[in-house]
Amino acid sequence: MCYQVVELYSVCKCLYYQHAVDRCAAYGQPGHRPHKKEVLVGHSCGIHSGRSGYSYGASHYSDSGYSSSHSPKSSSRGHYR
Image (cartoon, rainbow, N blue to C red; front, side, top):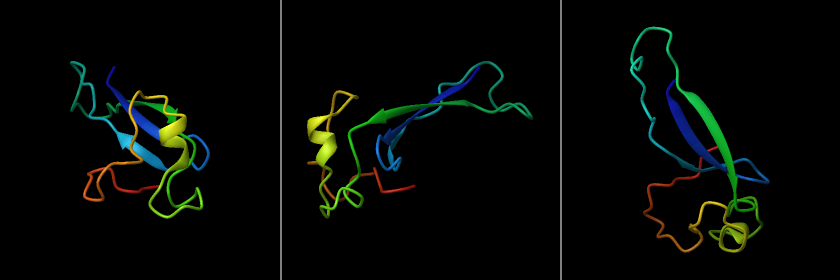
């Protein structure tokens, strides 16, 4: 079974980071879809925390071991919901 880890902010559920698919032998066959595992991180994104461009929870409550609150604006981690 293929797996894909998707990290979401715990309060607003906005996308923090979507990892690549961990493929199995059946990858690419018709009807086969990856199993998504959602992991809650931080608190809320910069838009929903009330602070533009700053994610309060990511620097204080990061469950993933790293923080995105100080990442450059050109980061590949865009804001998606």
